[in-house]
Length: 249
Ligand code: SAM
Figure 1 (cartoon, rainbow, N blue to C red):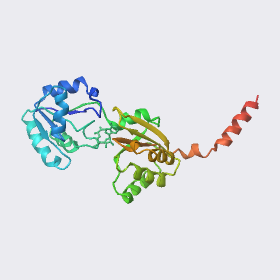
Figure 2 (tube, rainbow, N blue to C red):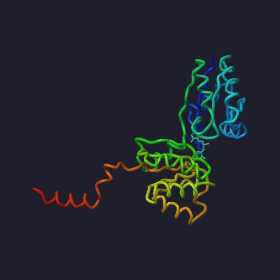
Figure 3 (cartoon, protein in one colour):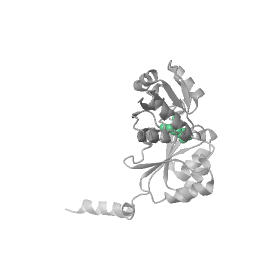
Figure 4 (cartoon, rainbow, N blue to C red):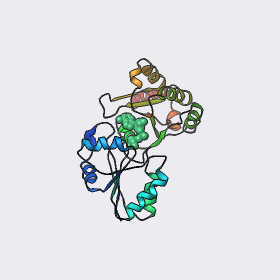
């Protein structure tokens, strides 16, 4: 059998490719990609020319069978997406599942992923988090989804588009309250990289003040609900206790 390599590619800065990714592209027989024209340009930047196979969200289930057949015939394949790590809000899951069921080796090559890259710089708890991908496009469905997450204590990570960011933040303000802390990581690894954190109402006001602030690709990170045990101590009471304890022998 051949091997299926899952290869991460940069999310904006072409220098973020790994040496192993480049070596793998050179060694495989075929590259499965979402947008073969886009990926052709990316790989030609690194001087790589290989046959491509188109694998999109809408044709993945049926095309995966064809790729599995090729792997069974000994063809080595690298799966890439337009940017970042395949399968993370990108195609690949059905293919990987079918390969594993067929006993084909799936070898992952780590690299850029927007969610993880954003989390690293957000200054929000990173020990426990949930990745929620894209929120629904329609406000009612989006609010319902957010409502189901309102008690979540872990950090919440979402992908969002420039067209919806203001509406989504309005919904977050309504559902989570004006003071919930949110970080917007925009154009990470690119020229206009901006990582901004604030209470959601303030973040919204800041974004509305300049339309350029809502442009580009973005990750939204919401601080999880503060544990209710911590919350029940009011800050003034804690301050008073500190003062009293200083007076104690
Ligand atoms: N598989 C990719 C990954 O590993 O990050 C994500 C693919 S998803 C279709 C594309 C979304 O990822 C964008 O809409 C945006 O929310 C986020 N994204 C990708 N590149 C980004 C960047 N440079 N800065 C901020 N967000 C980015």
